[in-house]
View 1 (cartoon, rainbow, N blue to C red):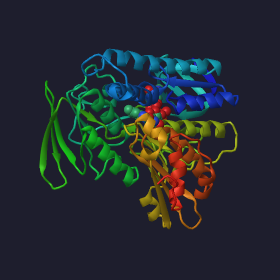
View 2 (view 1 turned 45 degrees about the horizontal axis):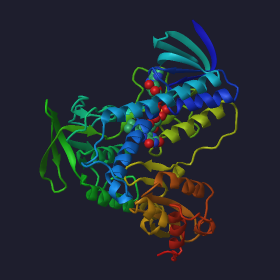
View 3 (view 1 turned 90 degrees about the vertical axis):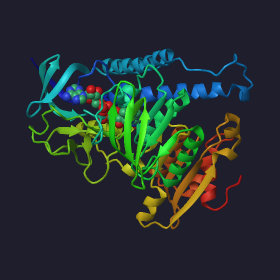
View 4 (view 1 turned 30 degrees about the horizontal axis):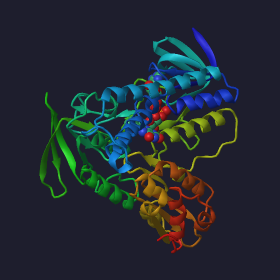
Length: 471
Ligand SMILES: Cc1cc2nc3c(=O)[nH]c(=O)nc-3n(C[C@H](O)[C@H](O)[C@H](O)COP(=O)(O)OP(=O)(O)OC[C@H]3O[C@@H](n4cnc5c(N)ncnc54)[C@H](O)[C@@H]3O)c2cc1C
């Protein structure tokens, strides 16, 4: 049976479902093919939402563990976490949000086709599993996303050697957990399971934790992790991992060339994600690819007319493409608007906020100090610690700082990097500052309410001009 649509979207992650809604809002007849039973993709089902729900549980345990400081009396003995209730609450949040996307599809009259899609020629998509049929469309948007991948020498068995997909469902807290990779996923799980009571070791190949962040952020996180009892082995390469019924034996090469052996109940591989394009038929249709990723131009057009691609599955060729939910959604909106004939401007990837919800949180946007220097800017820096603020003291969250990277010549804010309480929220102001090409002076003149954590941004701006008020 052939259907006719203006736009068929393949994949209902944060890229695909947002593209579908925007296209429908602009008057297009839209179908979305999704192979999972629920809508929302990696973010809602395995990624952003379940991990942040677990982090909120870890935070609740932290507050309750420090009950005495808050003047709260709890029965004798250390508080423990009930993983059954943790998963019940987390799963309820996930289901609520996926159902919310279902509602939005109904509201926008989007056809949800349950099955696996395969490109079948110009303007045609075969649904090869599930509700089998051939869809016809003027435009196709590929939004098939990404999946966890391993590194050479390590086979994921999903029991002892696991990915984030299994980590979000662990029924018991592992006594010991080794995490391979210190990107956002790795450090978030380190925070979750350390707080739940696991012995946690992070192994990172590069010389510092969260290597995409400003070096000062990495140093502060490593310091905080050390205090919390999380071990960091940086500059260390895992060469082998073998699982048995009881645990995992890991061999790693340390920076001095020695071999270090580690044992853990669970090894979590968090070394990045690869594209989901196998079986999609993209090559057969003549779409240009690069190592499994779909090549697109700055407006998300593939090499084949009327076929667009967005989100984790794409490569922009010239630069690293951030695999983030908000990036995929923004690309989805842009692709839908272009297809609907709207005028669109390319995204400035220097203005993508990066949020890492470990404890302490990280929020950053724009150039790091090193990147700004590499690009030839005469850089000036201002830093202000959260610990000085009344609000931080009240919350008992005094770690970390805000760091501003600015251009001395024109006073332009080039980057803002923060680690500490509410950093993932505070970064929004910095994103707007970069978008509006704001100067440090303008940030100084922007009034920050008292007492708030946001005062650290205003004070960091003062510090960039050499004169923080409260330091
Ligand atoms: C543990 C973890 C935590 C994360 N936390 C954050 C965070 O806090 N903030 C953030 O911004 N990002 C986070 N991310 C990243 C974020 O989840 C992704 O960047 C985002 O989901 C990408 O969206 P997408 O639409 O491109 O792809 P996906 O969300 O992967 O969606 C692709 C969809 O396509 C479907 N699909 C694939 N092939 C086919 C086919 N042939 N036919 C039909 N359907 C198909 C898949 O089933 C899937 O539902 C996290 C990721 C992980 C793994």
